[in-house]
Length: 327
Image 1 (spheres, rainbow, N blue to C red):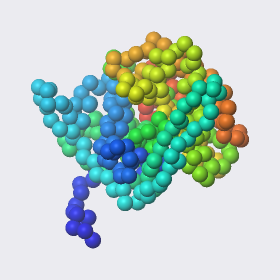
Image 2 (tube, rainbow, N blue to C red):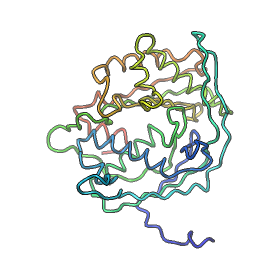
Image 3 (cartoon, one colour):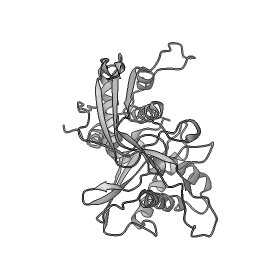
């Protein structure tokens, strides 16, 4: 046994995560041949800060994730992450997924290379974080595992992970009076989560699984044509401008059939943009989801839509439900 494997690691939380869709964390040249802890940690940071903003906690990000060197009182992040990827296997994904656009416009499609499939073990170590902030971090992890994804290219279907035992956490309790989310910051109070299930079996090959998610993504994106160029790019990403506000997973196993996830945060930038149009955006998305893409996966399907913006009056209870915490 290597000497390093015998060292004691002070694990505060250990997660054994299983890939439902392949995991990808980027890397130099975007080759994806290795799992990079920074790609995972950045996603956990982003999601936990969304929850903290929803709960009106302005201190969380600096207290947990550190500050810049330009701050008056700066320090490093207070979360340690250890990644064990020995039970992940590198798999080759389709080089290109492409089909003709209905309007005849030529496009290059979506490009993949490799990703990883199997079991990922994460250890999160607490380093001087308050009990309240540690609880927020664990609640965010539970929501991310149950409803969202990890790593890069999650907007293209990758990074949906499952776990046998979620990390233990105390239920969230609201402060006296109503929760006041942080203004002008994206937060989970502006998030939506959609679960689409199909009773037909999961296809065996990755191309079919990835393509189905991409077809749903294309359907949603095209619902903002014509005349909504800037809004469409804000919601679905534009190179050098915005990341994607809306993510659609590839198909993954679910019971005797299969499923995919659609989730997003609108608005998702600081400062916010198009926040006055959120109601219209949600309505457009729901109509497109009810229709589904032209080449939808066959068989009976069920769509469960959950919008956090509809639960502002009792946000703490709703967050507990999203996290699967029984009060």
